[in-house]
Every structure is written in C-alpha cells, then in structure tokens.
Image 1 (cartoon, protein in one colour):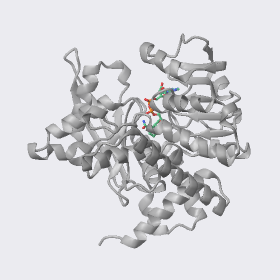
Image 2 (spheres, protein in one colour; image 1 turned 90 degrees about the vertical axis):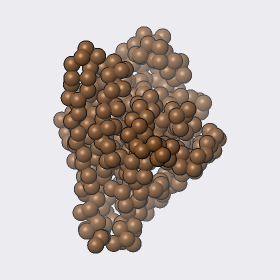
Image 3 (cartoon, helix red, strand yellow; image 1 turned 135 degrees about the vertical axis):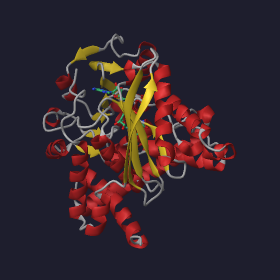
Length: 424
Ligand code: NAD
C-alpha cells in the first residue's frame, strides 16, 4: 500500500512556488501578481444528509473560485477524504493556468466533498450530491461556475447535479441551463468523447513529445498510477501505438507484468470485479518497486505529491506525462530535472478534459451535437496548440517545461488585466 492515504505537505504551497518561479523569470507585473496569488471566492458549506439507516450525517463541501478574468469559473468536483481547503485552492488555481494555456474562455475553480464515497451506498451518494448542489445554490451557474467530474465523481453524479440545479430554477428557464455541468452522460446532454477526453489529451501530448524526441512509440513501455477515468483511458489509447503497459497502481496496491498488460482487458476486468487484484499475469509489488519501474513513459493519474524528494530518485523513465493534477512537488521537480527526465506538465498534459468540457458547454448553448470525429479533431488542434506554446516558451526562456507552461498562462492573464484595468 502506498502513502497516498495521508497528506502532510501543503499542495497550495507547491502552486505558489511554481507560480513565483515563473513570475520572477519574466518580470511579471507585481500588481497583477498580487491578484493571481489569491483566490477570488472560497465557499465552504456544511450540510446534512439522511443516511440509509435513518441517521443524519453532516458533510463539508468546498467550492473555490480562483479567477474569472478569462471566462466563467470552471473545474471539477472531487469526493475524497483528503479534500480540504488547501487542496481545493491548489486545484482551482491550476484550472486558471490550464484554460489560459489552451486559450479557452474559462477561469479556474474546483470543489468537492470531504468523504470516502466507498463507505456509502449509491442512494446516499445521490442524496449527498443533491444536497451539496442545493447548498451551493447560486454560487454555481451555467454562465458563472460550471462543475465537472474529478476523482471519485462521474457522469451519473453530474446528472444528479444537473437535475437538482434545474429543479431549483424557475420552470421557463430550465432548458436554458443544461450547461450548468459538463461531463454529463451523453443522453442527458453530455458530449460524445468527454469520457475519454483527458486520457486522449494525455496521449496526444505524448505523441507530440515522441515526435520532438524522434522516439518510436511502437517499442515503448509505460506504467500508470491510477486506473480510473484518466489512467485507464490513457492506457487504452496508447495501446494502438504498439506501446506496452508493464505496471499499474491504484488505491488497492501496485502490480506488474513485464510481459505486458492488456489495458482493454484490465479495464473490463476492473469494471466487473472493482479491483485489479487477480487479473491474469499481474504480480503484486510494493510502492517503491512500482515507482522504480524501468520504462520509457510514466503516467501519474491519481493524486498530488507522488513525485517527491523521496520518490523522484527512484524514477527510471524518459518522460513523465502528468495525467493527474500536481503529481510532482517542487523538490521532486528539481530531482527529475537533474536526472534529465522530460516532463509534460499537468496544466497542458491533462487539459483535454477541460477542452472537451468547453465543447460540451458550447454544444448545450447552441443546441448542437458534434460527432466524435469533430470532437477529437478539435481537441487535438487545441491541445497541440498549447503544447507548442509551452515548447516555444521553454526554448525562449531556457527553462523547464513546467515553468514554461506557467509563463504561457501568466503572459496571457497579464495581457488581459492590462487591457481591462482594475475596477473602479
Ligand atoms: P478517478 O476517481 O476516476 O480515478 C482515480 C484513480 O486513482 C483510481 O484508480 C484510484 O484507485 C487511484 N488512486 C486513488 N488513491 C490512490 C492511492 N492511494 N494510490 C494509488 N492510486 C490511487 O479520477 P480521475 O478523474 O481519473 O482523476 C485522476 C487525476 O486526474 C486527478 O489528479 C484529477 O484531478 C486529474 N484530472 C482528471 C480529469 C478528468 O477529466 N476526470 C481532468 C484533468 C485532470
């Protein structure tokens, strides 16, 4: 079992260190720095939920809105025992940078409930979700702040948020509010391709990295931490390139098979058994052995602070493609730079999710339905555009890719603030 069930370091502190490093390098306007160093709104709600046995439990939910100068607040909702104000602040801030890099008209937000959903029934999760949505009230809205899935939330949970939000609106406005959440089931107004969007974006950026490095993905090996939405789709979509998955870790532990693991079959197995344990050919390894897996590509796709001063020295890969948000802390970053491991940083690598969320939001507003070919084509163009801007900034400023990604985001935000000025 790895050490992800407890967190001691501040995640928001990591964001501040990353932000200051980039801002120092480009002589960022000190007044605008003050604005972006703070979140705009932080909403904490305590709300009661009736459990199946008739008892009431009080839950704490969060929504942090970092910045909306580029557009409505946008970001996922996480249901996890480690959710707290520090984590949500960090995740909201990363969302602002992400949309700025890929040039989509959204700001940054994030939220969630401090809960271990595995301990509650589906009916309890439904009541919790509806009551949380009700508690947030007009702090969210289709042109104001638009939630989406994140860790332990999914299209079904988005459908309950949609239904609760619409049910609390005046009847004649309901149909005009379907874009209150993205990542909905397709039948309830979701976009085709949103389920795989983040994993697809991860693979599009790996393809670009491979072109840059003249690296043949056909003979590549990779391993993945987290086999949920992002990790499973990234694994499945790398397979057609000929690359071989050799290790995987989730909340139940780490497993490997040097001969290769079929990600499609593993995904089917997981859907039935809800565990990776027992899949033919998988051998259990410990967390340190997992992190030390010799491979070409590592895709962290679980939680924050996984690549640290402790674990970065173990890594034996060519590139880290950050499917998760914040998997590398600043100390880990320094070590992987010294080891000359490439990084495709989270705020570009996993931007596919918010890009296709933007497509879903647009389709809802226009009453349109795009096909998968259109979604994938537009996703590829937008995420690669962001990737290229980051590459250019890294070359121009002779810096690492994470700092370069921040530079792209900060430059855009600075320009907009200078154009608009500060009210009044
Ligand atoms: P998910 O809930 O679908 O999957 C999370 C995975 O992480 C699961 O396989 C779980 O077992 C694993 N995990 C949890 N605790 C773990 C532990 N202690 N050790 C090892 N594995 C552990 O979540 P997701 O949507 O795939 O999100 C994963 C990451 O990607 C998060 O950082 C999230 O913020 C980020 N992300 C998600 C999206 C999206 O569209 N869903 C978009 C951008 C970024």
